Amino acid sequence: MKFLTLAALAVATTMTGQMATAEASLSDLFQREQSSLNAVPKARLSGFLGFKFRPKTPAVEDITFSKAWLDQQPVATGDANFSCLAEALYFEARGETVKGQFAVAEVIMNRAKSAQFPNTLCGVINQGTGRRYQCQFTYTCDGHEEVIREKAAYVRVAKVARLVIDGAAPDLTQGATYYHTNAVSPRWSRSFTKTTRIGVHLFYRDDRYRTASSE
Image 1 (spheres, one colour):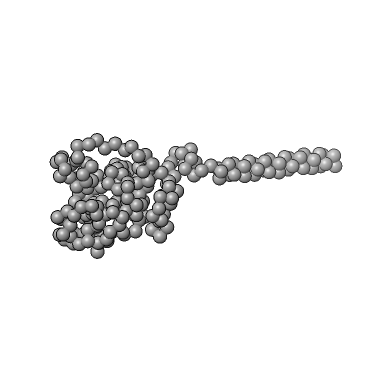
Image 2 (image 1 turned 120 degrees about the vertical axis):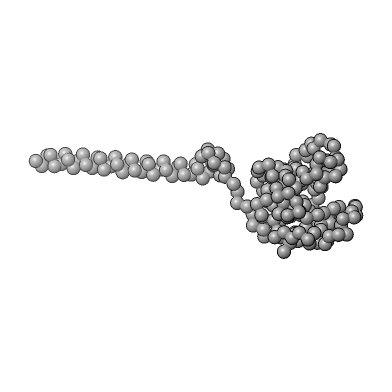
C-alpha cells in the first residue's frame, strides 16, 4: 500500500511538473506572439485581419499649415467626391500656400452646403462644364485634358482634401463661396462681401445664401 502511495505521488509530481512546463511554454508563446503583433504597423496588421485601419483625424488645433506637417500625414484616399476635391485643388491651388489650399477646399465645401449650388462636391466642381469657359472652375471646361503631372503636389493636396472633408480644418474664409486671384478683378466681386485674403486669393461670401460656417 505504501509502495502504491509513493508511486501515485511520483506520477502526480511528474504530471504537475509537465503541466507547469506546458503552462510556462504557453505563456512564453503568447508573449512572443503579442510582441510580434505589436511590432507590426497598424495599417499592415489591419490588412492581415481584413479591415482598413484609418489613422485618427487631427484635431483643428493640431493642424500646421506647412508642407513639412502635411508630408507627415498618411496618404489620403476616398470616394468619388474626395477625388473630385483633390483634383480641383491640384488644378486650382497646387501653387498656393498650404493654408491657401485649405481655404480653396473650404470654399468648395461651403458651396456644397449652400442652397445656391449642387449638394455634392463633384456636382459643385463640375457645374457648367458643358459650356466652354462658362463653368465654375475653368480647368473643367477649357478644352484641355486634365493630366496630373506633379505627383508630389497631388499627394499633398489630396491630404488637404481628406482633412477638410473630415472636418479637421478650421474656418478660414468665414463662409466664403467665391474666390479669385489678386491678378484679376471680376465684376461679380463687387456684389459680394469680401471676407479675407489668403495667399494670392481673395475670398467672398454671398450673404443672400448663408451656410452653417458663415452664420
